[in-house]
Length: 222
Image (tube, rainbow, N blue to C red; front, side, top):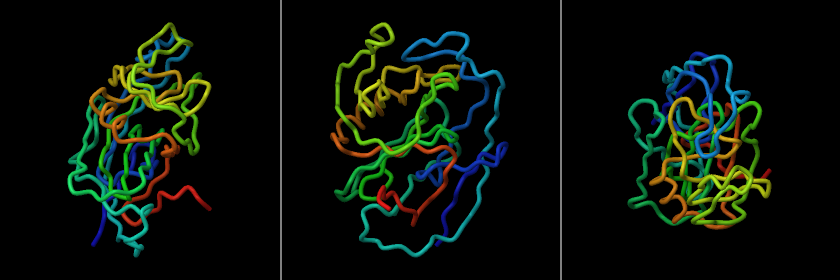
């Protein structure tokens, strides 16, 4: 059995610990905010075009009983575009929930027990207000949150990752030309499903140009 990985061909950078079949396809600059309106200084000066091409690799041997080993990626045709999302948890067994976000791929993936159940294009920060990398347990869940820091901008279905305001949330214009002040903005229906599924303490792993696939590890230990 083999699995496909997608790379950002124009930059030869790889997708994050999440998707064999999913990449964000976009071009242009992150010129303004969506959930929180950014000023002109936050614009990305140079347009970048991401082109996905497949690299086929053999699936490594793995322990099928390890809930932190990737066992399935969603069969998504082509690259994920802004505003696009996918969700399929039918028949997926219970298991720990892990979310992955990659800054290069600009995609969020949701894994339950190692099975990818959700994927969406994500709105991310700018160089002036970057989305941080690292491993972040969900601190709070806030259904009707607003941003006190940025003029009470709506942030529904908030999964708070840091106490200084970084979160996964809805209420965003997830489309070309928009950015955030470091949050991870996702389409509202995806945000709603994620909010209903995730719980406080579940982990979000944010990377910058990391690739893996079926047989890869989602463990945050070691």
